[in-house]
Image 1 (cartoon, one colour):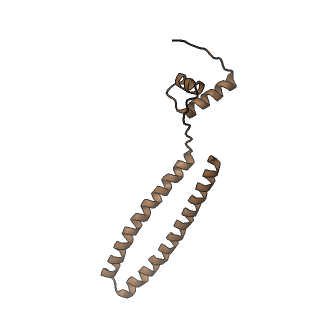
Image 2 (cartoon, one colour):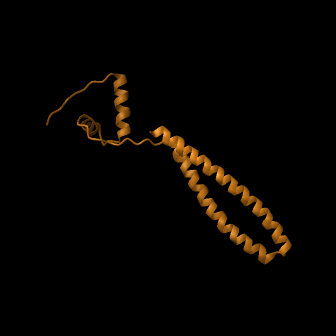
Image 3 (tube, rainbow, N blue to C red):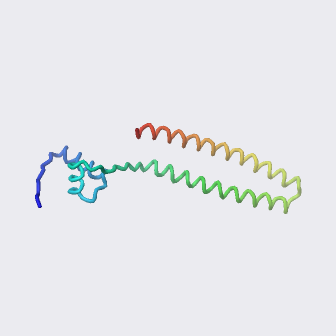
Length: 124
């Protein structure tokens, strides 16, 4: 077994440590071996804002499914418990709110698409 020593100044050490952390290698020796012998390693960037954005989009999708089920139950309940006129008036209000929800959903989808396109450009 052979051993080698390398000395870094503060700037070089900071660069080395940053590269090591990005590589997610098990230890510094493995990282150096991979680097020296040019074995490829992957670098993953985790953007916390992107993760939060995706989590919230997933939450919206779950809410939309819940709203769809609740909407069906509400329509059935209105038709069973109210006169046709009152049920129609309530359904008209709900319809307006659903149209607004669809509009907001489309805006969210457009923003997500724009985010995707900008992120893809930055990652190239």
